[in-house]
Picture (cartoon, rainbow, N blue to C red):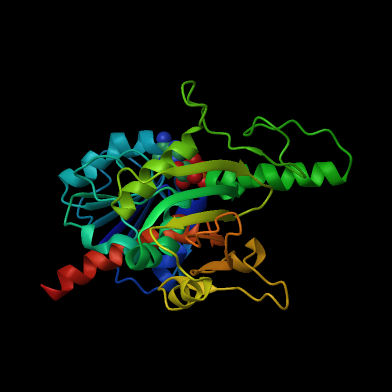
Length: 339
Ligand code: A2P
């Protein structure tokens, strides 16, 4: 019979996209179990022309489950993933709880599917790390990346449904000249740009998001010491992240070869029209499975020709979260089906 699939955090921004991705990609499912907090128990969410009733997450929620997607934050994953594993489910965890655990594969199928062992828990990477490595893997395989430097332009969806709502409400209030007190973010979000709201590490001055991007990108590319500089910034966009990136390779690489390599890369769409000044934008990337890559050019600041600049935009809820998680489940399921 087809697998039983559970989604923990089904009512959240990522949870809703997980339901949509499973439906759109026709993942084989005999039962879909939607789990959330007691607040949501009884809500109905659409799946394949039916309505599925949301249940409260408990320790007993995983009876008979084959694949359990977790997207309700790290503390829920730490507490409840062991119950899913004990019931024989394979957990695909969207939180940061297990990502640096050596026994837990951290997987972007386009970049490191070969590391996807048949482990009880598989970690879905941080959204920037997933979008970034999807574009970088085909370049790294050919030319060996020796250094990365980037700034991010991060959307509200990374902070969940509540942060998206704060952006909408704050924008409405701003346009109506009304007072608005932010609840989720430390600063006004509408018509503003600020340093990522994750906690600052007092020693390095880096925020938690920047440290995750560094550690996870290194792990996915299999380069534990790769030098990475990163500045993470929030921008008032709903659901697509941008990355302005500077890549140094071991040797000289011509921009045309990079463009050719990316035009053939799975999960990547080239948007690089210099004549029309049309490059990757959140408005084009939102709702798209492919990430968009463009503005590819040799860096004039490095006369040796080893450095390239480019711009990437990817849907944070899709390749940055739900889509990548479903692709992991598809890869796991294909292996079982082959056996
Ligand atoms: P609920 O909607 O019932 O609060 P987001 O990332 O968009 O903020 O979504 C978080 C998800 O995690 C939601 O589905 C939310 O459910 C769920 N969640 C939060 N706290 C708990 C909890 N204590 N038990 C189960 N699910 C939770």
